[in-house]
Structure formats: structure tokens, C-alpha cells
Amino acid sequence: MPKSLVTGGAGFVGSHLCEYLLDHGHEVICMDNLITGSEDNITHIKNDAFQFINHDITEPIKLEGDLDYLYQFASPASPIDYLKLPIETIKVGSIGTGNALDLARSKNASFLMASTSEVYGDPLEHPQTESYWGNVNPIGPRSVYDEPKRFSEAITMAYHRTYNLDTRIVRIFNTYGPRMRTNDGRAIPAFMSQALRGESLTVFGDGSQTRSFCYVSDLVEGLYRLMMSGYHNPVNIGNPAEMTLLSMAEKILQVTGSQSTIEFKPLPEDDPKVRRPDISLAREKLDWQPTVELETGIKATLDYFREELGFPAP
Image (tube, rainbow, N blue to C red; front, side, top):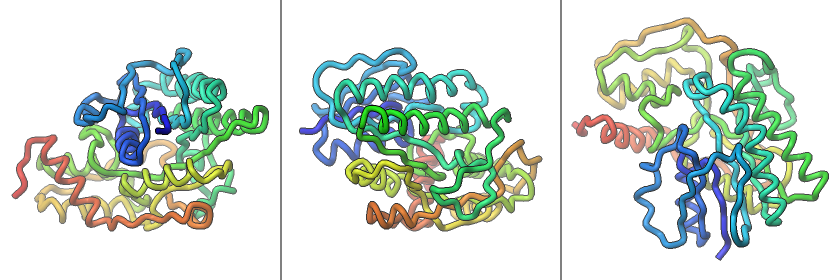
């Protein structure tokens, strides 16, 4: 039975990844300091092959026994979190990733680093390919998240080149699904929570900025395929279907049946105007592409949010 460690494993994506690995015959260690993750995301997992360790990976990581795979997913990921926790976000993306790499090296484990489409910044290339170097403000408010991810990519490649460590880098585009926090702050959780509560849906700018939304099960399938691929350079994983944030707000109003209105507010500093992955590389190297239709994913996510917020289905 292969053994996998998922740092940040009690978070939204991390918890789904833990379940996927267990379903694929792995022994799984979930490591999280619960700064933005929650034990509620993993308490339902009843499996003798699953272990939770409460640990901050900015401190050295000690682990007994063998380890085959390490997935580094520890980091605040929503703007609300990393703007509230700037130092913690910078440290986990630098010191934390370094500690995780040291552990992987000591165990001779394959290593996958969760990067982000934010490394492309407010892109001047559209859609974004892995060869694009990005347009990032290194001292802006979002830099506390963007730059640690860029650093994490750099140190991961340095360990690969210097120590021949078996590494992977995934650039994750907007992902949604059950277990997102209702106060997460990102578009779909914000719109759903506001719609269910009868509040105005907050759209920043004129809503013409675009995003692409990938359902979490599709993402996790891509992560696993990447880890098993032997490919070392960055790979975009996301859904190339692009839509404006205003269109997404209108979609949420339609699906929820809410009578809420849409309220426009000023665009935050350095907010990307466009965001869509070119997934040609994922198709070629991983034989991967998303399969969950937006309507299906939105309804599954809405069911979760109704339960979390205490609003029964109509």
C-alpha cells in the first residue's frame, strides 16, 4: 500500500484529495494546522489507512516510516484569508514548502507542489500557457500569495535539478465544489451565500472580468494523473470554459431562484481582468480534461451550501 502525505489536507481541495487517494488504495496522512482548514472536512473519513496530524509545516516536519508521495497543499488560498494572514501565507509558501521538500528528499518520495494561476498575475497573454512568465505586482496586496507560489515553483525546480528529486508542479485555476467555506470570499461561495440569505450579490468592477471554473472532482483527478505522470515542468489544471463574473452571478440567481439583486463595487487592486487556462499540455501529458458540466457542479455545490447555511431545498 503506497503512503501519501497531504499537507493542507483538511482544506477544501486537500480533503477531497485525501479521499481520492484512499479510494485508490493509498495510506494517507493528512497534515494541517487548521488555520484555514477544518476537521469538519475530514471527520467523516472512517478508514484505518487514514491519519490526521495537526502540524504547522513552517516548523520542521518529522515523520516515522516510509513515504512514497507528498502533496504540498498547505496555504491560505482565498483573498480574504491571505490578506488577513499575509505573514503566515508568505512563510508557508517559502519555509513550509522548503520543509516539505526536505522531507520528500529524506524519504525519496515523489513531490507535487500546488501552485496557482495567480502566478500569471493580471495576464497579458490569453489564454494562459505554462510558458507565459506572468504579469505580477511583486509588492501589491496580492503579492503575499502570488510571490510565495512563484518562490515555491522555483525551489521545487531547484530541488529537482540539484538533488534529482522527483517533483511535479500544478498550476490550479479557479476550483469550486462542496466543502468550500460559506465565507470563503471567492466568487461562487460568495454569490451562493448571498443568494441564499437574500442579500445583494457583490460583483466587483462592472463584472466583465472573466474566470474559468473547474469542479473539484475534475481537479483531483488531474492532480493524481500528474503525480503518476513523471512530468516535471508546470502543468495547468482547470476548466477552459470562460465566463464573466457577472454571468456567474446571474447563473447563481437562476439556480437558487433567489430574488436578490446585484450590487457593483470597485474592483480590488491587481484583480485579474481575464483568466482562462490553456490545457493543451494536460491533454497531451496526462490525457486529462474536465468532464463535469457547470450546471451539474453548481447544483452539487448548492446542495452543500444549503445544508451548511440551514436552508432546506425548495
